[in-house]
Length: 300
Image (tube, rainbow, N blue to C red; front, top):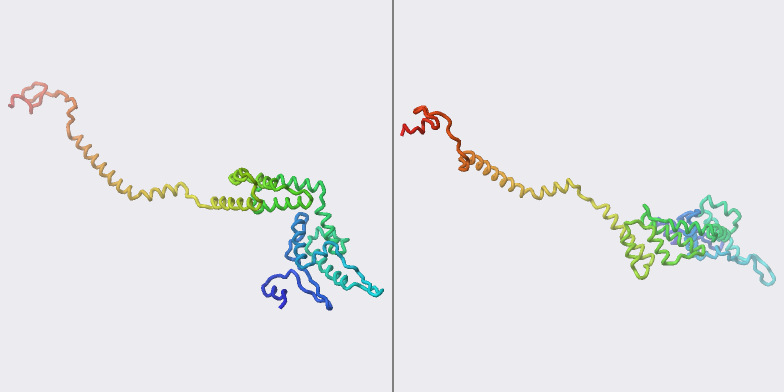
């Protein structure tokens, strides 16, 4: 069973299939899984396509290596079979490349006859170290900030610009890369920034990326943790102290009853400190003012 048959059984789209032409075998490259080339993703597109063709030992079709069209044997010149095979294979690669390029860019390739022509035209268009292009990338790098991006998105934007400038001959120093990463972070990442800047030697970009991912996970975890509202906390504390409040209720009731009893007693018991007022009435027995008949001396 061929590799393409195995891929079909597994539900995987093959990246190439063998095409038999006479006694020769060609590879029909499938680039449908590659993101189409746009004006902004040339670097990664270039790497992906080159790696795919190199994996099938076909990268020589991109650098302009062409076998001689004819060979001469015993003073007889004939068509070189290797050139015929190369030409057929190159047409398959040429077609695959066009399919992996967006329609807005395809008009640039109208005069390209071979895969190498396509590669060279794209390289001169998007990898040419023009001063304006370099300045534009440097400006984008300087103003790149995290904002609402995830750490992965933030890092991807930075590393893409690092690579693009490197491709244009403006390689960014490692320490400068670390500085660019730190300067675009918001205040929430200050602990990582302070820790990194306090080191004697800068960490690797990969190490810094990992630290920022861990800090991002902590921030997301803190933001998603449910916090009890004040009313809920109050209700919870009331529930926890309820058994005690029951005893307090009894105690308060006893205190209230005792207090009531004490208050009643106080109202019934004369206060020794209270000043007695003189009797102003007249005795009905003797007629003398100042005492009542009950206390009249004539009765005793």
